[in-house]
Image 1 (cartoon, rainbow, N blue to C red):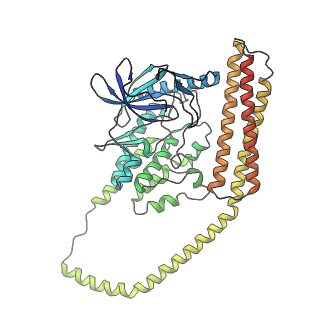
Image 2 (image 1 turned 180 degrees about the vertical axis):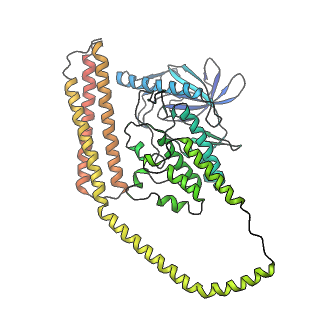
Image 3 (image 1 turned 90 degrees about the vertical axis):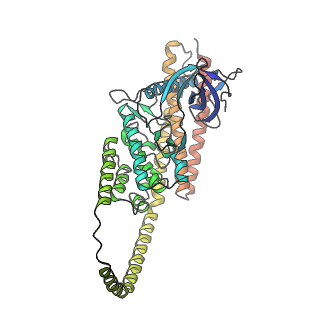
Length: 471
């Protein structure tokens, strides 16, 4: 894992590492203790590990100093994300909300970056709801706290972009805390993304909306609002919502919400349906409107509960009424029961017919989507090859050309990464939707070979450019 050893001290001896809590793509989290007052804290260290098979950072023999491969592209990428790590830590340090995890300080040491934050005693909601079935009132209270925390972030020009039960902590005293800002984005006063990356590096099936999966660079509060609605759905039902890419093709919206929330207050169901609407413009456009809808739902629910019950008449009147009703119920029960059976049969036949009609065009739709992916991949590969042909014509690379060439190479990397994501999505569409089309399968295999060949060309390009660098 390349983690620091227990008993290691940081920040001029201010913190002592107790144990490693975990590692993600951009850092390692530790439980630590302040040496001056024994307060337990969490420390996050910037340490890039893009996937389980590679680690761009590594430690030197002293077991502490962080270094990276002698590759200008890797160095440039690491510095870009390290700058984002610093900027977001400093932004979060200024956030003052008891519902958002508190960041204490940012510091640099061991040739990398760190920040310390509060250590929360309790479970994340994904674990908590496995042990406890939440009531409707408890779910409403929790989601309102999460929404208020999210409002604070949006007011501070921060999009979280990964709202889900796992990233919401419940203290042992019941307080709700929003955590994990690994994929968050910081904005300036004009609403532009301050970090140099305009992509979203993390997606959570069931909680990420469709526009976050097929991301076009448009950052908006509605990304977080969809995830907020999906989290509310999970708190109420204990279930993870369907993946966004399945909802429209399979006509699941709003059916899956209505069926799984059957019996809940209509106003609560309405909040979930609007927050999770696949249409961006049909969702709540800001967290304030979501909170207002939650407050309205709470008010109407309390109003219904507080309505006075009718006065109980004399016991004898109830007995007489009960006898009369018994005769009426017995006389109509058989007819009503048969009628319900007939209605249910008709409903099932109708659903079977609709399913048959949907299946007729299902494979054609999936095939069409995959062909669209392939067109994008081929276009990307053509662009990459054109850029490579231009770059290999340089006889020498001086300092004036270096930045221009570096930007071109980074663009090649991004195009190739997009190709791999599209291939992954195409294979997932075939697998999940059980499409059996050998022609499409062979077509995808051909695209995979093209991508692999492009990988080889990119590697050769890197080696060539290194040999032509003159400064």
